[in-house]
Length: 118
Image (tube, rainbow, N blue to C red; front, side, top):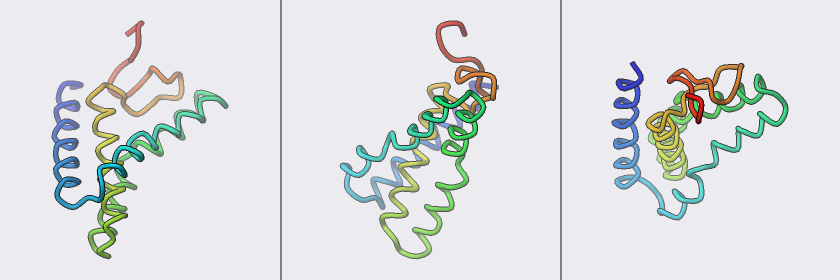
């Protein structure tokens, strides 16, 4: 199952980067914002549960897809670009095996355990 989910995420990443190349803003914006969703990992400083909630909230496709759609609908190139960058980030995380987190530990994801002991 993990292979199928990673293949799916690969296709999402390809579509997001192609969409950005077609509709997006500057590549500097892309570089600057690419890792912003990972700021949500700071929740792990409080506890694994808070960390998982924060990380998962920033790594679900729902909000960036809504942002992309609003950008498309309103003609906001910035909203469209941020949505595509965020979608790309999530997809690349999934390709690399960084799935949505369980409350037990950062390493426990819906794609399986990550890290040295996996």
